[in-house]
Image 1: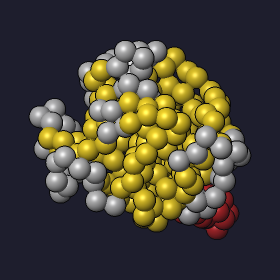
Image 2: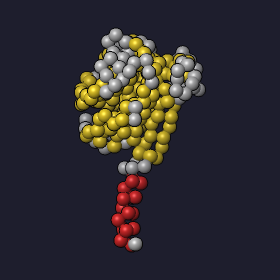
Image 3: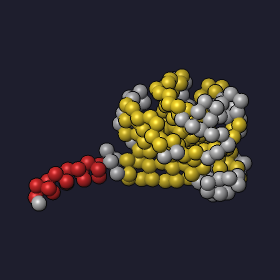
Length: 211
């Protein structure tokens, strides 16, 4: 019995080390339509005129409101400015509506500023999931994986990150898992689109994990 406990306890201890210490979900339902949600900041990496606003949408997973990007830009982003995560997770439900050049929905984490962050995105025009790091305003590809991303439908995107390890999950299925050390330390979390993508977001969640 003592020998069995000696084997089990270290395993339990290692699991406890990776437990979530704080988690929050934002449904945008308490925010007034027509403006940015409270505590969020929006902009673009590169050029363009993105338009982020809370809007009512009958298809929202948690009605009545969603966060909508309806402008255009190189890489529009919208972050929860009071967040600071080094290790944890970030997730969102997104619905790509239209876009001739792109129909993308993505997540950013370890966001330092508009030119330096990680991003994972799914694209309904390309039917793939991809992982990038953005440094000094330049987006750099880490990995692409084919995946079914039907347009005009809701999807769930989640990223888990701890140290150098990154895991990207779309609709409950892991597509990317790899190590990368280009962007370290804590940063904000948020959502992201590309080019002329008109995309809806809902149920944005994030959590901090302790290592």
